[in-house]
Length: 38
Image (cartoon, rainbow, N blue to C red; front, side, top):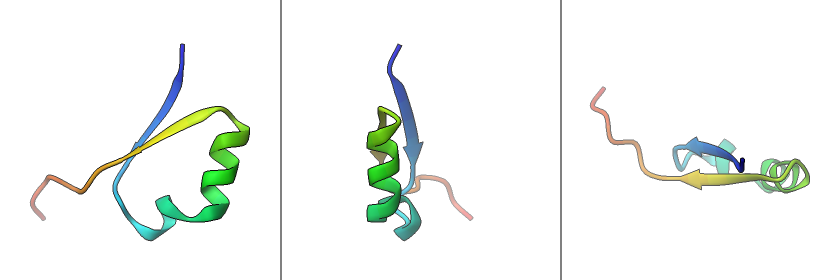
């Protein structure tokens, strides 16, 4: 089963450090803009 991380488009989620770690762990990041109202 593939591992997937769903997250918003925040800077922390798009950082190069996180992208490298996700790739090392074979986790596919899926980012999308937040849809809920605050």
